[in-house]
Image (cartoon, rainbow, N blue to C red; front, side, top):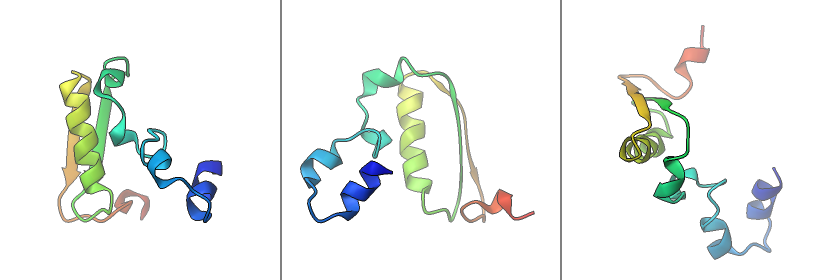
Length: 83
């Protein structure tokens, strides 16, 4: 939350924050993914984070760590929580 508060504040170094892989995990160096556990990535067709999930899937795939990627057609973000 501290990092999010820093972004919202007016005294932020945008260049420094844009390189932070905790805030932007898809900007993590590729070699880090080789040490990560296998991943299953799911997203939805109309979810706001679909593009980020697709990018992450590519990074895990390049590292040989992607177990499965799924995109639920016709669904919106967090659709599975509406039961």
